[in-house]
Length: 81
Length: 238
Image (cartoon, rainbow over all chains, first blue to last red; front, side, top):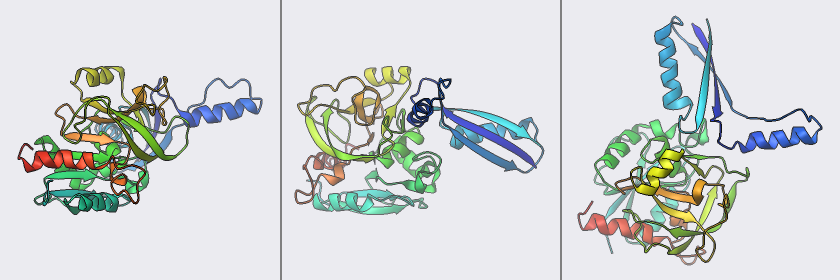
């Protein structure tokens, strides 16, 4: 069994209205140090089998095909066994 | 009039405009047939419509899960043989997720779900719409994720026709350009509808099926979308 954490965010340069709204709210709350907020998705996967390169490649394919839309989103995969 | 022509209306769990599309077809003398998302047989349908709604609850991303429904393999094959496919609102989102149309539809720039009538300008022709450039139409929009986006090279490809064509833009009431970033949902270049390069696949955020019946609609600019393609189908062009 392997566990994967996947973080999906809008690509840099794509306006993130939810992040911008939270950013303005934080600044209004006098957290003046906040320069930028981006909001994305956090996905966890539990995958049968050994966490080897082949398994990771399949998780990357899952991201490319379904979990993220490469036209608008970047993703980052972290794993633990 | 293309009486008797048959249009398949693809129904996903969470679609909610399929009856409006079927009603619009019926009003125009077109036979509509529902195709459930699990079907693999499109029967004798001559054109397909993916209606609006919230397929699979819009979970993950609008259209992302619907795109992998069994019926979509057949929809993609149908489209690749040059036959006409229309995606309205959520249907447009599904067609971009399926890579049958370029770009993506992201959350409205000002976070609001927008439900109102808008002015649109015809920019080019495709199988589903063939109006003189500059014609102004009015149709309702009803979406939270209709903000069209594509990368700069795809936008260039929409300008020169290699990636597809911009068929409809949001505009002022008189057809003039909106100010920069002035589209109701923030859409890039005020894009409301695009076709593929071949012109047989077309997606738009506005709802032409809700602008057919004069007793229930703000305008009757909707029929053109259905009669244009059905003339092609009936003449055997597609």
